[in-house]
Length: 484
Ligand SMILES: Nc1ncnc2c1ncn2[C@@H]1O[C@H](COP(=O)(O)OP(=O)(O)OP(=O)(O)O)[C@@H](O)[C@H]1O
Ligand SMILES: O=P(O)(O)OC[C@H]1O[C@H](OP(=O)(O)OP(=O)(O)O)[C@H](O)[C@@H]1O
Ligand SMILES: O=C(O)c1cccnc1
Image (tube, rainbow, N blue to C red; front, side, top):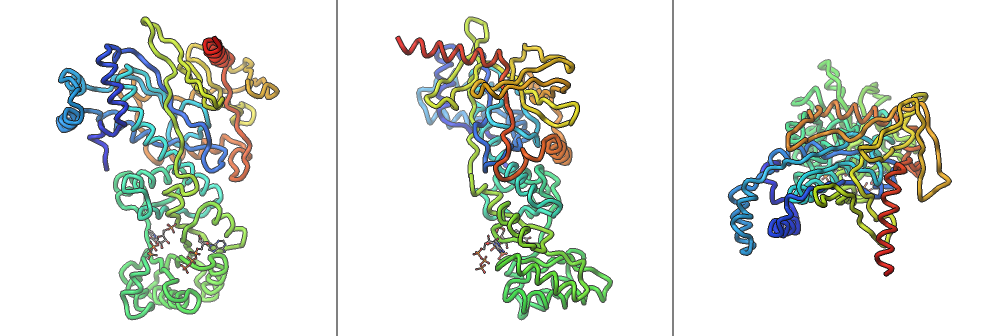
């Protein structure tokens, strides 16, 4: 999939700003940006951070090719050759700190922090947000589905309905890291080592003279992984009886049929009937797979109706995040260089929720040593000393002053990992299996009220007093300047 050759995978305004900085002589001014989102998707209580692996590949191979340079020269005749030469020599030389993939993350906390020249930090905004927003969205959706499916098997079936190839492949990875068990996408299997699974389509049945013949031939060819789709004609009258007959033929050869798949109709009723018919035929080991526009809502509902489904194939709703197809992650300048000093900068908005939080920041997860559970995320400046583990930490929410809390006996886990330092990759990308188990340990750190699907408790994300004071002062200064 696309990894190399992504230098122009950016918005034109980034290149225009780079050019204007270069003409102005300010392109080497230092800057700090932070990427975060303001609102959790799907009404969920948390999001699952994903996208870092692709970001790392992108940054590592970030070069303007001769074709890119030629294209830019043609696009904008005003670009001076010296500027194009600057692009030709371009290498990312800044610092990137990031949440780890699989981490539970929350609104208004920095997920990725980028430090460097304004030239390089501006260029990478678009691609970073593109990767982070999509993959985090799909991982969050997958984690939600996983919450309701409890111990059942989850198969990712979305490729045909995904927003093109990259979304399918990276979406399959995002689903897997957040708890899906396999994907139908073979390229994702090859590229990331995700287990692959597949049944067969209606067309398989339609290409034979009879459903029975179709089932028998499939079972003969794939005796160890037979899952038969039973709804092509009539699930109860034809599909299941034919599947039972095939399973019996397999039994006679000492083999066991894997499952049947239901793909239409009332999945609760049909699965209950199917379970009865299979059990009565002595086939209690044959599983039931269901698919058909499933999501966390339908799966929960089907379970409440007593559906006898042990494997869920989930496509469209997951891979397109159909109920909320975008995560609104943003990338905001928080510090800039003035006369050689780094100073905080703020973005004001008429909407208080959109006022940015100035200054380069760290994120700590405050974990109770007693319960092992997360109490809050705490955002402070890097130079602020965290109280020692035995000390007291004041958590306060300036917008809700009554929500004060002092915590003691906690561990403060730093959440932003160094990934690139002065352009050098210093982070060893974890294996996908490690990311999956990290996601599980992250879930274990949260009380169930934060994880539930409907109306979850809001997890605390608090600013240190110093961060709040700087934000408050800068907002007041802005107000004063604009009152005059
Ligand atoms: N018992 C049930 N309770 C709630 N939702 C269900 C139940 N059974 C199926 N569904 C869901 O209802 C939707 C039904 O979709 P639809 O109306 O397209 O029916 P269909 O069975 O696919 O129709 P067709 O037979 O034409 O393929 C799907 O999203 C499916 O997952
Ligand atoms: O419903 P989704 O969650 O997106 O899951 C994937 C769907 O894709 C297939 O249907 P399709 O009609 O494309 O092909 P088929 O003829 O093999 O059923 C499959 O049977 C599922 O219904
Ligand atoms: O293997 C399957 O059953 C499958 C794969 C992709 C889409 N729908 C179903």
